[in-house]
Image 1 (tube, rainbow, N blue to C red):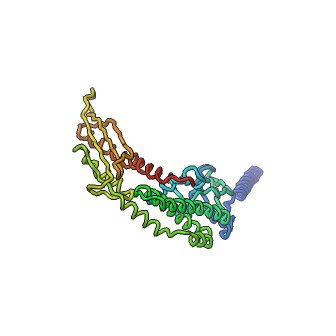
Image 2 (image 1 turned 30 degrees about the vertical axis):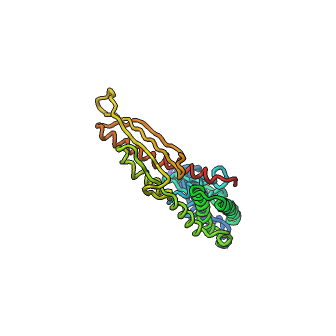
Image 3 (image 1 turned 120 degrees about the vertical axis):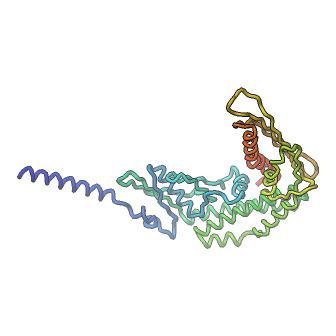
Length: 344
């Protein structure tokens, strides 16, 4: 009988201890409803989860970013262009990583005002964290960024009145348009924080964003290029070069004053490798403006290997095509950026 009583006593102590622990580690209400911790009239908040606190906080920031119409990838080159224009300033971009899903979230908003509040770890070791931002103070940050962009747009537009060259005019208008589009993104996000502040920001613009975009497109359409291939083997690269030019807003037309002259060649290599065949490739591009002045050159070369020479040549073409889309395209963008440089 004593043994039975002792066993029952031990069981009761164990059950009581477990129940106490469960009560102490009770799931907080904010895990399922962050508004329970931060009033939605004054704050925006989101919960994140991860295997440790750092991952949970990153996930919470990412979830908060999603409220601001975050995108998995950029829909156009305007965000990249905007980032180049404001490089080194406070209006930088935030790249947030959802650690649990390994998905990169890109947001136009710099979440510099985000704070991390409470955290909680469940019995399985999963960590929850609460991210929040204050609406009114964040709205002030938006106003500051929008006003800074507005000032830069007006400075660029003022410069266009002093210039006659088509290249300079397009560079300035396209830069102004990139800043204007970013302002439209910021205003759209500001509506989530404060609709009244968003209306005020939208109606205080001293220019019409749609008119500005139309002017930038028209200025680009005035610039056309003739693409000249100086070696028959390079004909395969012609569509890629044309695509780079048209994606920047220019036209490709015969007998244009602006020119892109390029050559591309390959040669077979005799290397002591019985398995693969090697070729060496070389590409050279010169871009000339409407006065015949060389704007810049782009050259690249290397080796590719495959089971046959033909396969190696096809691999080289893919390599060069990728570099045209990235490096050559980047050089042309840099030239436009230099044209639009202004002391903001």
